[in-house]
Length: 375
Image (cartoon, rainbow, N blue to C red; front, side, top):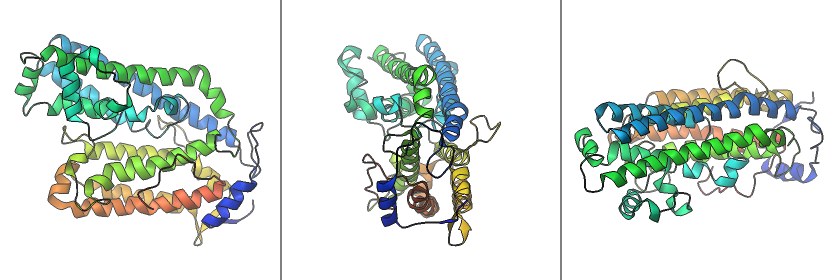
């Protein structure tokens, strides 16, 4: 293999301009078997994660149905538990904004936070026949964050929450909205999973070319976009005030639950590092992924293997996350410096991934990459 030194962003433009379409073969001009990598991603990571999420959402739907039929502390606790399990699994799915998920803008209907409480209440008041949950105007009024509000934040105590679903003036509308939200999350997920297993997998594993629309290039962009935006900015940077003059402790993930924002962030970080290393979703095996591709190219930065630099920085950032309070909102209120320090460690991997790795793979940043946060 030819020793490759990380190139400049300027060189990336030249490399991309000179890249060829190798869609008829599993290998590209650099000789790496991209099709084997795509197959590992599809069969051992993406599809199994979607299958697990579908199963978790089925359990959430059943728990919700029991709660709607008989709201009490037992059924409320059960639907909350199922919501959290599904939310954890979602952290392994969100980064794959490709195929039917991209077409439907799946993640925008599943995890935009903070949720829009005013819009939720207006929807509930207007009745189920008056709102369209698929409308982009409702993206911040649906999905896991909206369910978080309805299960934990709609009133100040469990007794009052149960009253919302049993004795309030619009308790039936409240139950209907909660039910509609969860049913839609299930139907969207099943639609995307069915597309993968019946059709899209074949298209995906054959998309080996170095073009803006090929599977490898899109996944590289999706991975980087998610790491930089969905994980770095949304979970840490925005709430801690990196991009503003003040922090926003109400913009953390799972704000109303209060105790699981750290758990969700750790799951998301594990999902990122596992995918980088090609770890199967069930952790039973390891296949080709970014780490192997960089090893194959023997990519070096400052005298060190790039894949080791990236994994080491992941480990440092994960250790920082472990030091935070389980409740990120409380962490921001009491000691926001720790949140900012954690953000800084997460940030250090952005250039390694978004510049160095993409140059090594000869993949350009696509037009949909909205880079307004800076590197």
